[in-house]
Image 1 (tube, rainbow, N blue to C red):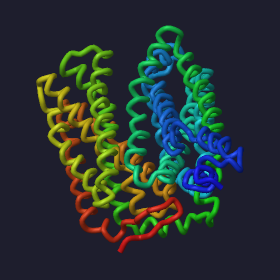
Image 2: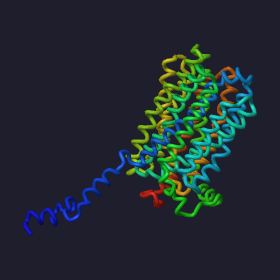
Image 3: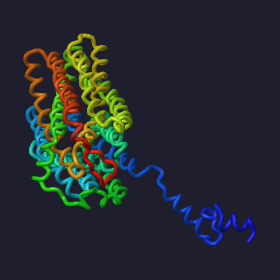
Image 4: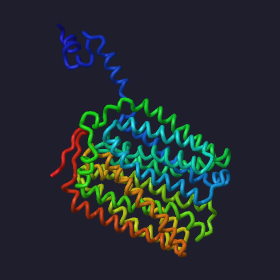
Length: 450
């Protein structure tokens, strides 16, 4: 055999150019063609981002078109409040069960079914004819569907991302801001042009279509969830495990304080801008969230990126960043209600939003750092449920302060919640986190660090 022939058939290039196997090149080309343009772990982030946008947008519809609903159906302010409060209470009670279910059954299936359920309920809400039908369809059915989504979704993301967990969860969390602004705008535009029913029909219909698409794209993940290959956790086992993790308990308390601030701000900031600075209702509604949510988007993306980078070397970085972000947000919260200069208020809203975004980027990533993988959905469900219960008190407390003629002081007083929460997180990062941290090197491994 000549040296040239040996070099071609048996030498260093034979693995790439095999004259003995003419199908080798075809197989190589086929394998190359099968490589996805977007890695699957990031494709699911795109789909879940869209699902969470719909989650938040659907939640905004009722609030935006409420004046049209009241005029058409003859509802008063108290009845409108009952509809909204019933939905929050429903979600708070369902979330713990939703988390437990997310740890026992395939999370990808739960995600698709929850999206389809709340979207169908949203669509049917457009057929409501009064208080009772709105409570049954909107508050209960939609609330149950939306509550089922979050624990399964964040656990599913954590399941597919280890080193990129903070960034992946931050991208998903940013959908909250996009859905709030975009959904509110679209719902108002549709409502003004075609009536309040059209907003529910359009968003509900699009959500159902999105559920079908996500089902087709995520079908091969139905067997990925660790609950399939391992023993499904029992309620007693979940509670006994989570109650021992002090970092998780403290973080749940702090998320309750953060949610208290966010809900109180969203409920009363538009009124404050309207009454204190003479903005129209439309402008007050827009500017109360615009600067805040744009800055929050920047904060959540930066927080996710830097957390993943530094957490590899400093595991407590996520928790420390979350606590520091709350403390840095204190001056912004104070001037948000204390300044009589509108420009300063807008700057304060932006500063508050940026710090809130830094905190939001590490909510679930920090929790998953100390909770075993098989309990991720349960822990997320319990934590969010608790935060809803605490947050629901904010509109009532600030409303009482408004009746006393000092809404600005009430808004500035929200800074105390950030002071308490930030201090608690830094304490947990120093005192409990080092011995409760779980190093997760691979999807199937949970090795507690010592």
